[in-house]
Length: 276
Ligand code: URA
Image 1 (cartoon, rainbow, N blue to C red):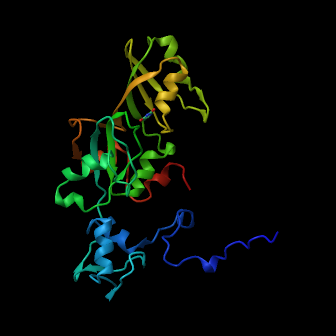
Image 2: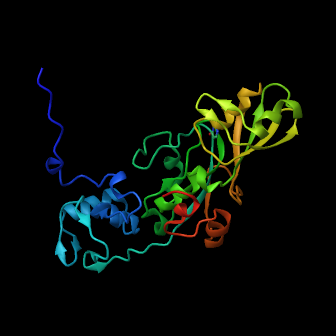
Image 3: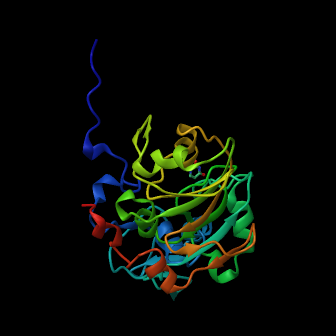
C-alpha cells in the first residue's frame, strides 16, 4: 500500500497561530486579535470583529486578518487610537465556589468559573483575556488565581518554581500522625512519587496539606493513598497569597503580592527556576 508522504513544511497554512514548541525560549510573536486582547484593548471576540471590519491598522496599514502576525515593536491602532502594548501583569484572586468547572479561556460555557467571575469585572478589567492559573476540581472550593499574563501562568504552575499551594481537606476516617507521616516523605502514585508535602492535622477529620506540584487530583490521591479519602477540599493559599474574599467574589492583587507573594519578577521569570 502506498504510504502517504509526510506533510511538507512549506504547505502549512500561513494563517495558523505559531506553535508553542517553535517559539520555546524565544520572544513569541502574537497574532493580531490576540495582541489586541493581550494589551487589554478589547476582548478577543471583539478584536476579531474590529479587525474584520477594517478598524485596525498595523504599522499604518489596515489589516483585516485576525491571525496576521504582529512583529515585535509594531504599532497597532484601533479607530486611529494607538494601543499601548506593554501591559502590566494583573492578577485576580477569586474565591471559587463548589460545582463550577475551571474551564480554559475560550470555553466559557455554562457552569464554569468564568460565568461567575466575568460579569463582576469593572470595565477596566473586562477587556483583558483572563487565564486561570492552574485548575481546581469541580467540587474544590477556594483560591483560584486568574491573570492576563501567560508567563505568570507558567511561573506559578511549574513545579520548578516550588511555590507552595496550601489545601485543607475534610477526610473520611480518623487522621493521626502515623497515617499522614508518609506524605511528609512522599508517596508513590500511579504517575510517580510525590514530593515531600507539609502536613498538619487540624483535627481528626481535617488535614492541611501544602504541595509544590499540581498534578491531576493530587491532594485527593495523596490522602487516599494513606487511607484518608477526601470528602471536601478547599485551597487556602498560593505562595504567600491567602484567600481573603467571600465565596464567589474576587479582588485584584497588588504589585507586591505578585512579586513577593507569587515570587514573580516579570518577563522570563519562570526560566530563572531551572527551565531552559
Ligand atoms: N488536588 C486535588 O485533588 N484537587 C484539586 O482541586 C486541587 C488539588
